[in-house]
Image (tube, rainbow, N blue to C red; front, side):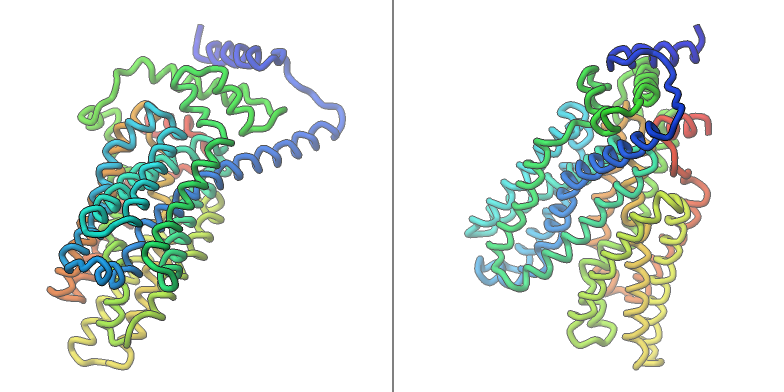
Length: 484
């Protein structure tokens, strides 16, 4: 029996499990196609609602990242923290995220996508409670570490879950909603932090965790994880719910099962196995994108944007920081709209090119300032460079590496490889944010030229290494990468 016979038999078995006769459907009028179109819309709505139920976790991620910025002076005063103690408090988020990243893949494999999200939401909530009741640096730091662990897991599991429930036509746009909610979470926390106490702000940051826990009660587990875990009936039921009650899911179900059966012949994959030739290509794509995403400077530039604007000649930089933060929301929304129309690779190229232009313009502006040339234009040029940079980042490099990670990693290595890719991202984020002030003391222009160099490498990397995944099922992506 050849592979076509296997697929046909599997389709027959799947339809039998669904209680459907193994016959081809033919229509003699337009009545049934119109019903199928309506049912398609209903299934799209269900996938969209399920996505909304989990992307609140990305809002939580943004809240965690932004929390320290508006509360620094208040926490330092109320708890009598030294600069070193508050700096430790801020940096522990990335430390916790690294711990979460290391465990995220194994947790998602063993507990399921929903189980991993539940655990991370509970961990984050515990962290915020600890921060709320803090009377000194110790409990405050423990709380920050816990929130970091929680978002380290969430940042991996969320795009994986969305990619595994969405159809190939919707996957890119829906996955980009994670980045959109992330920047909305940042903006909301920054604004709210200016009008409430740091304790109250900590309580508000628990709300997304509670909403996530509630939403997880009403949505199915990832069908692909259910199939991998051997829960056949639940797999069929979940896939049916995501595709519509009367949709013919036999081909997709058979494709998923066939792909999983081929993977069961492979040995269990550990971290060192990822450097095997069969996995090295996809791991290189994921690690490379995450490395270049961060070393383009986004964490340093974003965290210290106000200081950059003050260095350029602005009085306080507050209005400029508001513009810097607000532009991310519409540009990320535009990314969500364009991703499944234009494709991942074109948006990455536009984004990486734009970040190069933004960094190069900002670096050149600081050179003009250091030589006393065009002093009146320097602040305007820096603002323009910064807005070009963050707008370009938001339209591609911000979201697409996470989307592609969820698409290109085979399900049998998503645990180990996902942990590695997630770890690289958070370690790179820590390295960039930690080194930024030292680089600026060395040379403001040199700092941005270094970042522009990484952005230029990102352009070449996308051209040479990164594949296009638009319009393909996850199984089709695996087949194309294996044949490359």
